[in-house]
Image 1 (spheres, rainbow, N blue to C red):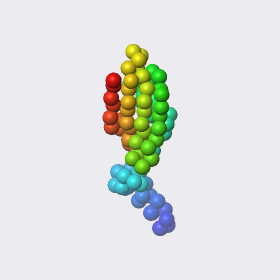
Image 2 (spheres, rainbow, N blue to C red):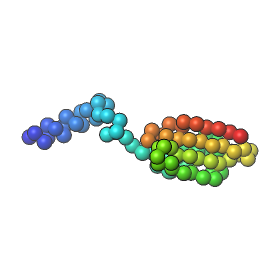
Image 3 (cartoon, one colour):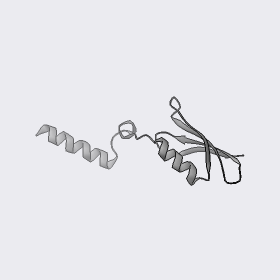
Image 4 (cartoon, helix red, strand yellow):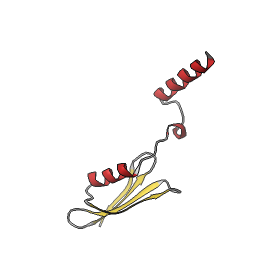
Length: 86
């Protein structure tokens, strides 16, 4: 009975957002980052690299006009940290 109570309590905390970010952390995969790049105007990918220590996906590519685009994406949240067009 105690185990069931603990499990139900933990489920309630998760649904209310009361558990720390580390426990809820989800990682953004390469396919999600690839799709984000296309959604933000990159039509040709040159490189996608995960910088594990910094927790950032580095994306390099080109838009339809051949201009370079660089994008940094937070590997945990999926938020675009930096986007630069040359």
